[in-house]
Image (cartoon, rainbow, N blue to C red; front, side):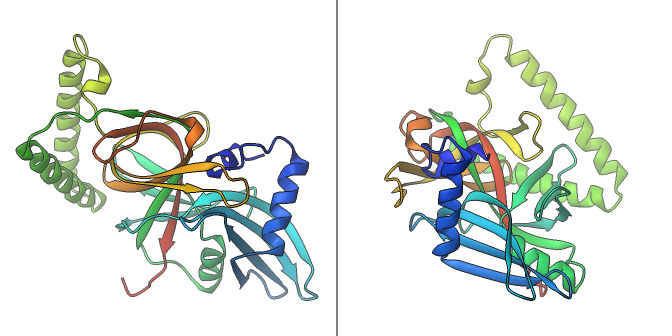
Length: 293
């Protein structure tokens, strides 16, 4: 049973029977229904229901045949991503044990893997032909436990330097993908220098007084990360089915802006723009399939 239902306000679900009732509610009252061919005689069906105007909800995936019979496969909770998009070379990989896909961004020093919400759209697109290499993705995530941290003190010059550095890193990553080994060697040397500097500072400083943005794989699941990032936006909402309070945060982390939903009961501290978010997060995304890009 997916534990992340709690993040969107279903903390009282403790059994498969309770979960089944909620999933049947989605099937009876979907806000969105997508049907795409997966073979000549069978179609994949995706039904979504939102439980807040802020885009938290549940998606049910199943298969229908020529007679219209529906067979349930799986379901997952979600929060819709915000407007911030990241565009780069992106791999889309099928999940082996169910109908679904992972998105993979290979950034040399960290491969970011996230669960893709638009299952039906991707299924239909791949049935028609291969996807374009360069894709745009908007990211979101669900968290079960997080802490709000005070911001690091930075000048305008510091912020501009970091922004320029991130742009330089993205450019170098794209050059390395095209086979520029000189850039790869330079990036590896820079990474070693940064590590040496951090090791020296950690002797007398706490890691949270140094790091304001990081994404570290967490546990055995490939799409779950321990995230630290700066809060760009805060929205509070309520699950219309349970009445539980949900906090939705736009968090800048590395090269991405991620919209993260968390149950208010699981968030320690007062979220405000400029403060930092730290929490273990199930990373999700929606890929744009605009082939004109």
